[in-house]
Image 1 (cartoon, each protein chain N blue to C red):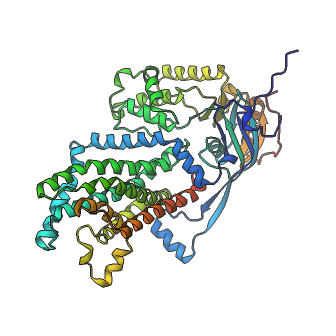
Image 2: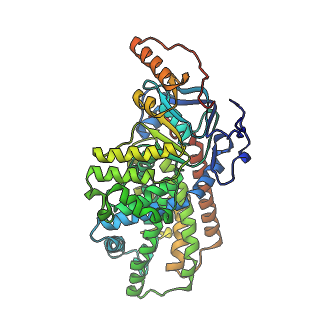
Image 3: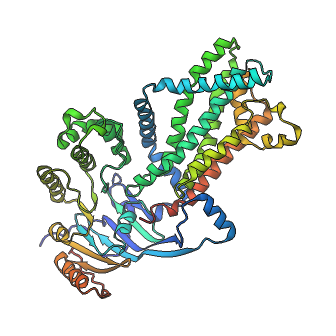
Length: 284
Length: 267
């Protein structure tokens, strides 16, 4: 028997060949694998969206009702009781809150899916990143659905609609990039440790309050302002909310910072995910 | 004289495949505890070698059974071939469409209908939605659940779920079948049906790669057996012979003779 490896060209081109030596660096091979499995991403999103709406009687209504209820409660606290004097507070709040929910939900869901991913990839090859992208995809579906209550609130409060709403896809794209990067890190850690999701959820609460969502940035005392300024979510939320609430496009600096943060998150998250690839499939 | 057919490239090739894991000396499953230990420098690892420079070549149409005690590296070998785990050293080449028939029903979701699960399952195995929808009738027919395709899987009996999983996983035209233990499921009649389908794959000259504890199964279905121990190939050859030696070794409880037999059956 010959021991040499024939060149892959000696088989017909439609026969798939897996060659571990041709995988290359995980950073790129994983990206290629993700692209090859993009149909699975769609199916996973469909699964999670379907399951969510089958399980709950309110289903799709709940997705819209949830931010509304939150909004009512927080409007009472922050505008009536604390008298911040933000005009049309419900619109200001919802504009930020929808984006925060998108972030918190998709990254948290990525952590949950790590169990699913571990179960699946123990025996079958699937690039694990499909689960993270699917988690962000489910978050996107919910974000789009929750635009409905936002429209409702804008109409009810008499807040003007601005042409700047057309900028929202850019804001959502940046958000999705940021979420994917953070999601990849949380997912990779959650694949290794059991308490990552719980720990992360605990950290999300202070993070939420460091992001100007229930208050305006100007309200923050000077000595604490750096906390808000170094918080990437500050910029991403602003890029999403300014077109809705203020009716202007985000300023150059804000936008530039949001773009940098989104790209950095995606690249670093991906690098971290890819650097742990060797550990996958090891052990029982 | 039969004209010499040009040799086909092997379906599965392993060349000097080594798989090493790092295993923590103490299992730390909490990230908070890990962070603290890390700061204290109290994280220690052991190195575990699951496969040690294994080389083997499986010709198309070969039916290979891998045997060996627990921890010998059988499932790691399967994982390396199934692409689930990358070799630390060496090279793995698998040519052709691979059907992993391992742990059926992975990713079956109880809230989803049988139909939705079949599509999802197919996508996990690398097939497209359209392909799965086209095969839906045949799959439901084989699994004998035609009337229940649109009911959620949680309403299925265990047998129905297992039948659907088997029907979905085997509804392929693969070149290489990776089989972990036996996958016959359901009642006796359905088991017979499973065997029939597997026999069909055999007749069509598919490559089988089977990992099992059942020596009888290897002797019955394979024409080549590989005995693994401590991540190394102890024997590789005719199933009856290899299994007999393995039985002897298992009875004696002694350490294995480190003899490499290269008598493979592609001649």
